[in-house]
Image 1 (cartoon, rainbow, N blue to C red):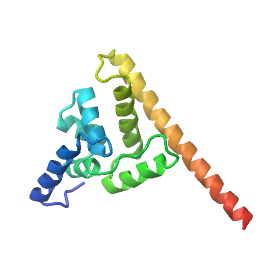
Image 2 (image 1 turned 90 degrees about the vertical axis):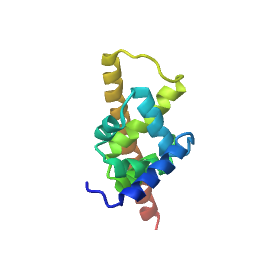
Image 3 (image 1 turned 120 degrees about the vertical axis):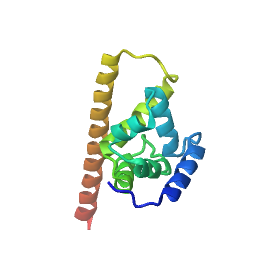
Image 4 (image 1 turned 90 degrees about the horizontal axis):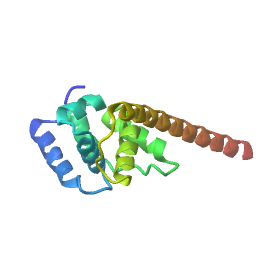
Length: 147
């Protein structure tokens, strides 16, 4: 993915993202939490997300989706389209950050257990998104049948 923003604009967006990292309403908070939990450099984070600096900056400025909402899958897809980051990776990023934060922050975790938990988190995100899509589709069919 090539950058469509000027270097100056990208730096301004990154500065805004840094200001939002303490606000749980934005993805900047999720990114900051994930980066801190996993002790990742910015370069490592970009590689994990399959992103570049521009898409990461765009992601940081997005409103954080509600992982308990029936709209979660739809919101993840919208963010994915805007940032060109895989929706399954986005869902995993959010759920993992929220889970670790809810459990009390940074804890030392066995690397094998951590890898397994990441796989399970990715599977759970995929299952939940798929279930949400199926439920939405079924509701749409019911609406058409009633007409």
